[in-house]
Image (cartoon, rainbow, N blue to C red; front, side, top):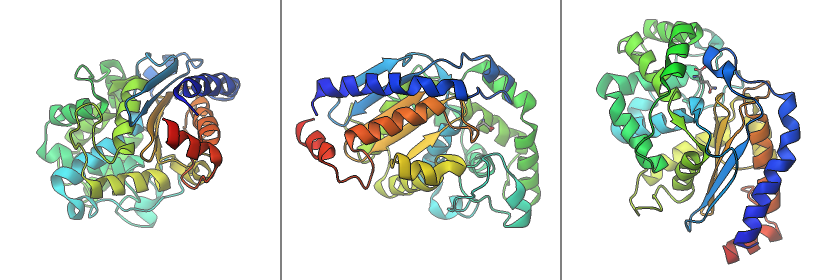
Length: 319
Ligand code: GLN
């Protein structure tokens, strides 16, 4: 596999995945997201050696949504430490939809993990208590390699106005002591981090940091501590694709995180970071086209973490 082939494989992945788009639907529970064209499809790859590949609508902006939950987790772990963070959220997949709050009452007052909405809101509460949103945003700038990244105000306002299920969870967690800071301040932080507007190149840059042991290939700077990176990537494996994380692990086999804006990040250890975008979602809330692009790339390039195929060895040897 050489560089030229990687370009071709990415283009083929996109073309092969287009046919699934018609089976998906854009997220309409956030009114502003319902306006997005469901036929958009784009992808970017950045290898740890700094080669970049793009295809389709890779320059199109979309909001990070739940992909941001990986960044807020890393930010909270780096600034507040493991003990504090994991006193508020668990480490187990819930098996429930991302917006479910059922277990908060029936199982434990701690949300199951930091990637379901309740868990991410609990982590947002910890951060919002001590940090300004702009401090978090400047970390996003570093991870994505672009200082002009900002929130999409329309999406933020749309979700802030209508996100009553998230609001209910937050008040429920305030009542049980999981959220200790002001609930509306927590929700403002959470909705803002979900509204951060990126393209697939930004996502690939961030996932390349994840693939490259936490070090930014552009500057050589360490952006994520090794121990924290291990936690984040493990949770991406077990909980990153909501309640289809198990099937995704079999079919694709890369640490990944999706968002209802249609983005997915996936990283292949010491090889590459991948960012994909397709706003048509499957019934679990994952980009349907994006999922297939990743499955195609994983199979053609031998990127599954347990892949032992010839293609992966050739890839390592020559890229
Ligand atoms: N902002 C969205 C929400 O809270 C994020 C959900 C997602 O991407 N799965 O519902």
